[in-house]
Amino acid sequence: MGRLVLAALSLLAVFALHDVALAHDDPVVTVRILCNGFNVLDMDAVLGELSDSATLSVDRPIHGASEIQAWVKEQMDHDLRIEIVDIGTPQRLTDGYTLTWTARFSREDWRRAGISAREVTNAVTIRNGRITNWSASTATGAPQPQEPILAASSSKND
Image 1 (cartoon, rainbow, N blue to C red):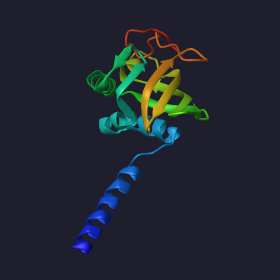
Image 2 (cartoon, rainbow, N blue to C red; image 1 turned 120 degrees about the horizontal axis):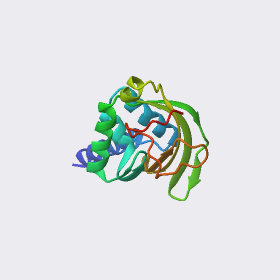
Image 3 (cartoon, helix red, strand yellow; image 1 turned 45 degrees about the vertical axis):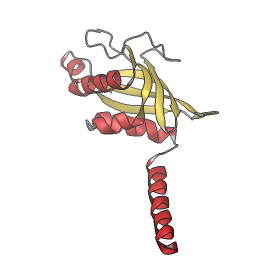
Image 4 (cartoon, rainbow, N blue to C red; image 1 turned 90 degrees about the vertical axis):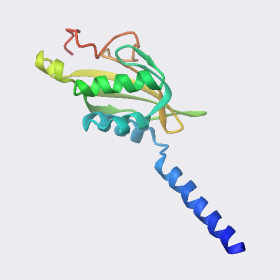
């Protein structure tokens, strides 16, 4: 009986450590996985980096799992590509991190309109290895959530 309990505890420890190993606490890794997920059209990878209760202010306010999933699908339908240009140093919070980064965003509809890419400044808050807040702006400096940068009808060429 003792060996059975020991074996069960060992198996439980392996599963617990496996889950810890899958989660990451590096905000730079989180952002890189998010961007790569868009680039290879891997919805699961992108959604895995976004908290189900996240708030996104990229092209419009998005909140909650169903809105996030629909938005990610919409961006993938437009072949969103994200090339990281510069990534800042993570700033530690008591319960996570903040991170700013700059990237070139490109979509198929923009490319057809002659806009190869837009340079976008991004700011994310990450808690428990997942993005809980993402705001973006084509302006330099701090992101302005109200500025729609992914709207297909925009004629802005940065």
